[in-house]
Image 1: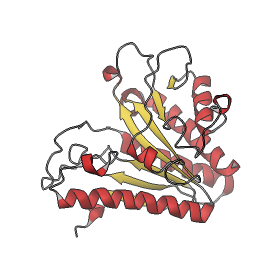
Image 2: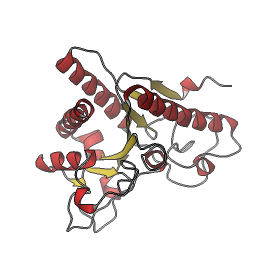
Image 3: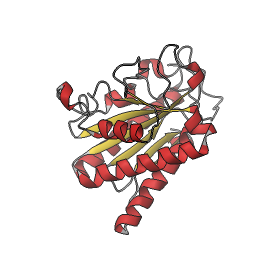
Length: 253
């Protein structure tokens, strides 16, 4: 078996938070064949963005409690064109590649282990799956936004159906409310405009409340290229705001 840490970076943390970054890797890995179909693009900047978020959440705990507490994380180093870790295994890689199979299964076993660790240790788990989108590739006719949240219609946050009147009384609602206050466009967030909304991919659904455990919550974050690559000031505001929201959610639940 290969040393899979050449392809996957991970660490077990000390708070019930996991950061997953499946599409930011740039490692070519010539021995793994290209996938034949699907999206191949790299979510550039998501690894750097996520590592800064991890740092800010840790600093927030240190400032408030003088304790060194860190999130768990798992980051793919390999190109999405070789393995798409946010897809069902049957379509995630060329099925003739044993190495791709090992990497894919390692990534998902690690997520499962981290979620179970959080549930057993803290009684709950929150997984943030970090992605990126290019604003110029957004379908025409939709409201222009900087952040898109995916929760599979809240099924990744709740194991039972939630009445519509309570849709905003949860972490997703807090995130939307705070970014709207800052006038940073986010979807879902405007009930009367066409929204480019993503429900969340395989990771969000697979490890969310409806499919994995009622104690496991997942949210897919899609950040615009403006946030990830071009506007440092906006990126810092988004990172600090998100770190604050996450900290409050962890300590107040």
